[in-house]
Image: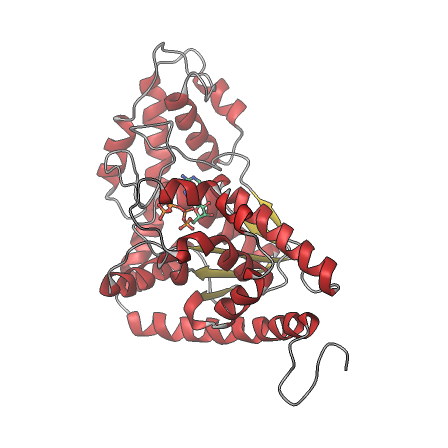
Length: 335
Ligand code: AQP
């Protein structure tokens, strides 16, 4: 079975974009793939953080992943910092990534814009992400569109390493959902729905009360005209709603467009509100049950970390050997 790896940052409340672009697909992937999913807490350190909040959010996100349907018996679910090989490989790969490449990353440009001081960690984020992926001989990385550039860089680093030191890393490919790869903010449909650029009315949270979910969708900004047509350039608000509808009904954008042809925007909003509430309802209910037992969560995450380490350690050793680092006991790439 192909190996799949992906992760989510515990930087804020999980939103509908995370759910559609990534998490709901992970749930499907766990049966068709050898799948690893990770709460990437080390990535959360690349922006200022509050320690107690980070601990709480790490548990919250892991619980939400299970509530959404990730099953620790069917996939490997763990917390990034529990597997030190991620940080260790990052140092090795730092020496293959270039300053120019990292400087060109759109996410770095966006997140560093206007900041008085920018951490080395924020700059190095894509190399940590490359390590996350390459450490597990990953074939596929299911992500939202915003992570496309980072997975491309991961491929470049893997190919560069293999070219210099011999076949070491599997070169992974990113996979995207047919609809919903970039869910936009409901109040500002030209900006991505996001955890940290919080726009309370424009962001549907996975744990929002169903009434709140429906209200946010019904108040979504639409465009001039009244025709429900998919055209992200001139009709970003309506296109976002059509994309949400397609993603949550498992259909195509064209099919959603046909369904609402000739109808007012209000009909589209009502339908999107309904499918969103129904998609999130079971997650919210299951979350309440799982959150009542944090000790069980910690136990499951410890098992996940052990499984992940057993897969990561031989890959790290392979990379060390091929790079010519002397192994304890004297073995090297040439012995
Ligand atoms: N708006 C989105 N539409 C579709 N997919 C999205 N993802 C994020 N936003 C959208 C995907 O969700 C996964 C986890 O995201 P992340 O936690 O690693 O961080 P991110 O991509 O940077 O997302 P956020 O929510 O915008 O967080 P902040 O604001 O903290 O940076 C990824 O697969 C991502 O593509």
